[in-house]
Image (cartoon, rainbow, N blue to C red; front, side):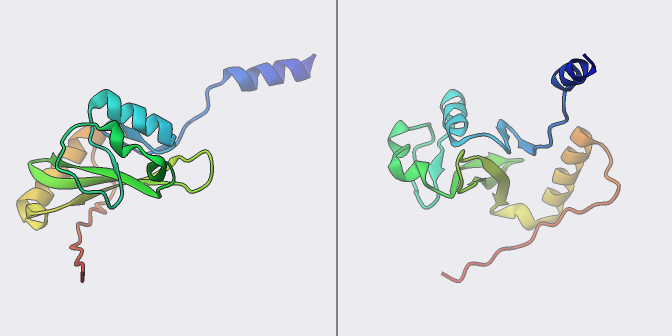
Length: 142
């Protein structure tokens, strides 16, 4: 009888879920959930390496290669600065988002931008114990 109660308690007590969230994206989302969310919010999601000026969701880009890609993303503006939002997809099934990365372009290295970003994050999540904000410049040698 005690075993039944313990089992029921385990079922009824909610567990804490640890996931990162950005905008409508969460780590742990399946690739199918990513596509459905992109469709619902009209986000121009593409597999990595595909460039297109279309600013809307387009199911033509959800092809066979999309389902096997390591990374999907789109280009947007955040805080008035161009940004690329990248969702890293785990290679094993079920294919899930394990990392959300935002790459800023343009004026993202300005002191004003860094200050505005830190203020926005502090307002949303509270004062940090210590500031670990690092906006580094990536230089591509292509």
